[in-house]
Image 1 (spheres, rainbow, N blue to C red):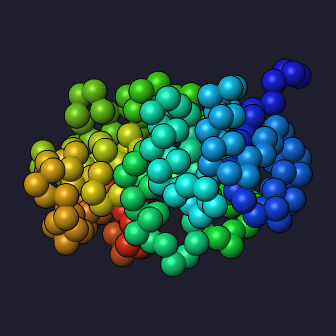
Image 2 (tube, rainbow, N blue to C red; image 1 turned 120 degrees about the vertical axis):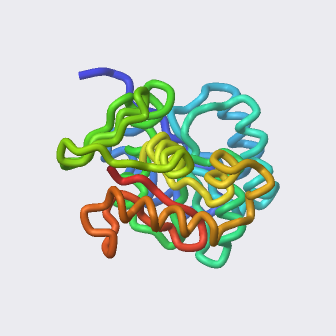
Length: 229
């Protein structure tokens, strides 16, 4: 067995979060590291970069989004956001600033650990997603720009393909409306959310086994979409 346990830095000012999250992380095979303020967390990241960071947006000494931006200036590992349910705008801003995912407070430790596993797995993949992705009878070749379903070619428009590729490259992370619109249509369209919904609907009709009950492209209400293939 390896002596290395992935270090997970938890930056949160609520003692009860550390009390239940620390033992849960330890039991799951991680080494929890505690920071109660943004300043302490940033110092810890600089001192010994952790394998992942869990960052609360509501910190006493600095806005969580500012802490995220400062961390992203020198840290490229996974950052998961803890956010209150009434902070949807902050949650979206954090994802656009480079957070990998978010978990809403109150949260179940099982959910957080699952999101953490996805984020860590994504970090150790090669850039983007695997060149060929297969889910059921659907195969997407990101190098050849070829999509087949049960051996038959699936015809996508260039925009539909680019949208699908962006979602797949998310590697299971939520990708915000703004991120998708900017990447596929350009910065001038970053607010055209209804336009994006139309294209996602068209894409689901072509690739989902049951477009009425999407299993591959999941909607994160008010935030964006997540590829689950």
